[in-house]
Image 1: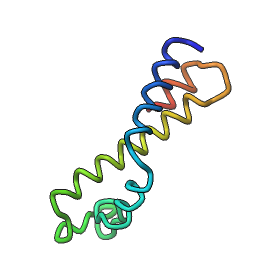
Image 2: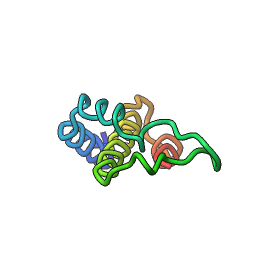
Image 3: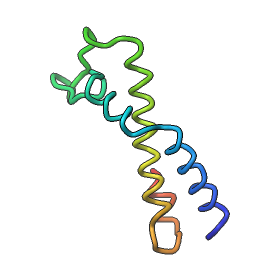
Length: 90
């Protein structure tokens, strides 16, 4: 395994260890920023229901989803190349 993939594996494992999935799932249920948005412009958050703490959990959720995408790239059995690493990270 290349040093770059080793670093990605380590960082992914570290972040997964820090973020419990049950907490992430409960945030999705109660956070209006994580619900499906409706309305004009492709949907907008229901700002009247949002509290400052909702932003923290929304960012944590986004980071967790990004870490899942990185883990999928790291776990890819194919040899690393530009398309399945760099482009996949886009």
